[in-house]
Length: 108
Image 1 (tube, rainbow, N blue to C red):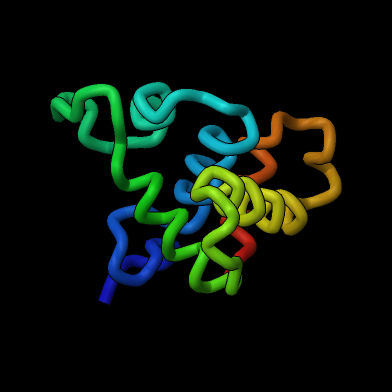
Image 2: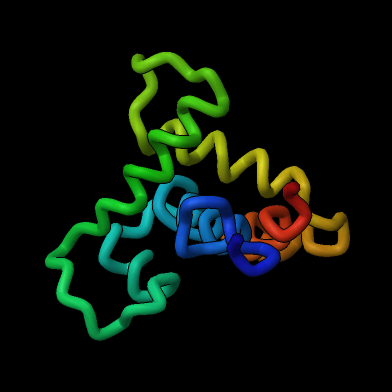
């Protein structure tokens, strides 16, 4: 059992995952920049990549039934857009990553 808000079999909540996918795929930040904003283990040495983003995108591909012709970044963008669509209307002027975070909070 995990705390409320943490995605099953993940170390992050859906809000943080949605925000990370939005930063990577919608805002087009590099994985290193996304990891620095989202990762709880700031002191960990990962190099310039964060494989977790691709793992989350693969899970999103399966859950969205998106074919392999779409890149992982395109899949991540679609998942982020779905989260953005669930954000409260009051946040429509907020940055896309903030809307994705709020939408992730609203996801079951």
